[in-house]
Image (cartoon, rainbow over all chains, first blue to last red; front, side):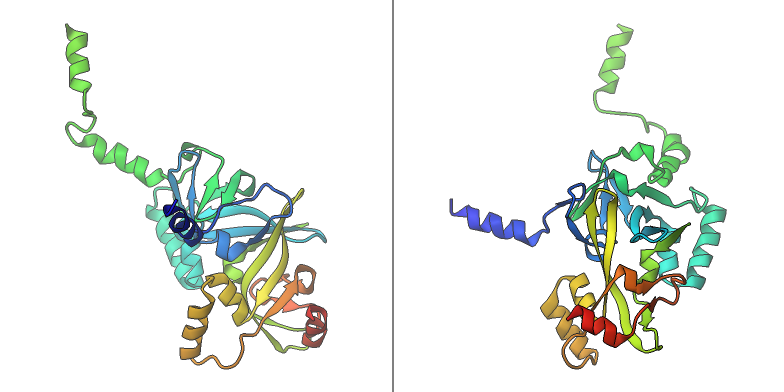
Length: 159
Length: 105
């Protein structure tokens, strides 16, 4: 019982997650969304929300369309010239060839300390570098596929 | 016709009113979830917007004070329809500062 106030204080220190599908919910887009970590349904990180795209159709108010992530988006924020330079580098040597990871706003479930997304990481290109590393580097190291218990399974199969 | 606006590029941009007077810098954007999606309601200008964005009011004000900021933090809330983002590099108000202050009061 004595731990309850401490737990409450701990909970208050971390911002409560806000469901973004509930009509009437107010959001401060920069504070609540921009630069927060995006996680998929298995809580695997997709990187930070480096950018946010608004779309204005005709006379209506601007609508949040998607979140963007990637070095090119971050580079653009640090200056026009620097952004172009980063984009050129990414196009030439980047694993995604300078393409930005774009997450539709409809996939956002809630925002808090992290942005919870209603998708699987493998549906996106967010881990392109990790996949490339696994294929080109880790995959070439002898014994890379060794897992605990795998040897015993093989022995059993042979017997 | 739909127009794309990159929010991260709007941040920190100086906003001028119809008469060319400075209204403040865009520091925060308030949006509300509705049936049509997440719609922008207002743009927060000035130091108060920055304080809201960093969500540590006391410390932010102290740091800004050390950096040379004087007086009470300025706060201006511009409704979305009063902000002209035809050229996102040069955001402008569709009204004058007096009209905006009259509305916000």
